[in-house]
Length: 224
Image (cartoon, rainbow, N blue to C red; front, side, top):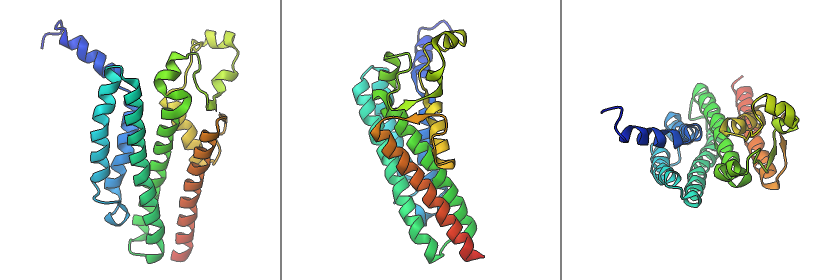
């Protein structure tokens, strides 16, 4: 196709407008079900990924045409589907440990994948809900976050301007960093959690990670 064709810049605009990082995180969280044994999958192993792929179609289209309310709705539904899959697999993991149907190596791998899915899932929730969503956050720049107090806000405006970050707003990686800390240190570390809904989600995420660690330790003691 001729590089001067009007279709080329149009497709470049479409591809640039897609939020690649959260989309890949959503697909990764759904694809984890493929790596889990059948005993820990809620339904067929392909079901969760297919549902997410189907929901991504209207999510991307509504974002491209500027229907942000529908984009927000489909994004929440997709997050809820992944969260339901994570919760179901965690329940099945709890029942699988005392039954000892799977090998210790398989259970260890499955627990790690669920721990990773926990990080991705809650990072998506923080990114989707904070400040009314990514579109609202960017329209209220600078900053835009209402649920978290990121360390960038603690820098004086003059210094932020010198750093080229005077209109800084949190992106998906910033929420992924918070979610990772909550699952490893059981604390948001340098980021304060302000909103009550964010505090509830942060407690739930830390509780899930702690439960996975306790289950693995208990299983390891039984093996020894």
